[in-house]
Length: 295
Image (cartoon, rainbow, N blue to C red; front, side, top):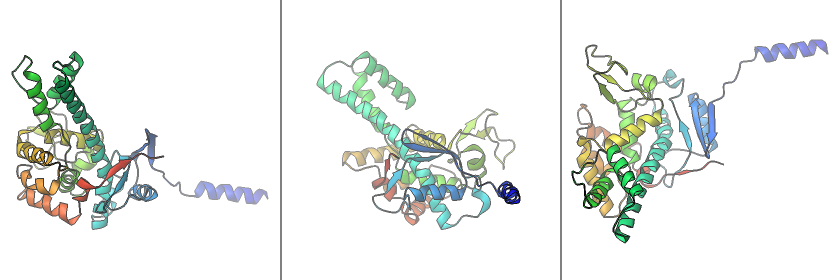
């Protein structure tokens, strides 16, 4: 009996330790701090979260903070690329939820203004906060200021089609294999100038800019969405989105891909985005998916 116990202890000590993903469950969501590719696939399968090209896609609130630790172990394949898209989609939808909440605030203030003459000091303060965040300016200072501010904010404070967010992240990170994606959680080649903070470009040692680093993939996605909603290069993008809203249509990526020709120095970037949207069925992410709370 003693020999059996000793043998069992030796076996247990010698057995390989099976790693588990590092997760935090909070607010009916799972936040994955670190995990392998297989662990993420297993987690998605547990909640029946499959290919995003499916109609009426229900997306669990599983938020991946960093790319899998072994993502570079195997080269890209179509199946692996589809997993990359699935990892990012819940984050994109979460960021859009937060933008929608801000837009709802503005619409509520606009409705209150229609019902009465004056806005409260709290409402005025909130409009000024959002105007600063979304780079909206008007020199007006009297009562005429607020309708102008509200109108301009409603053009800027709106969701970005998930298909566009997913396609560009895939292209700019080479499906998650880029140095910036792995080292900086950076999905969109965001630059910062005249600072030593960030990652130096590998091909230009004398460059005065750096690539911005983020604490998580979600932070990179949120910064990208804000850029879509503020930067001058995306005025045509925002105008097309506004026109879609006027006919009660959700912002739709395939229609907006043509506005992306200033998005990078890559040749025919709008065409690359359009191809990626089509090949992976990303248009469905603009129409069908919704986040659902986990038990």
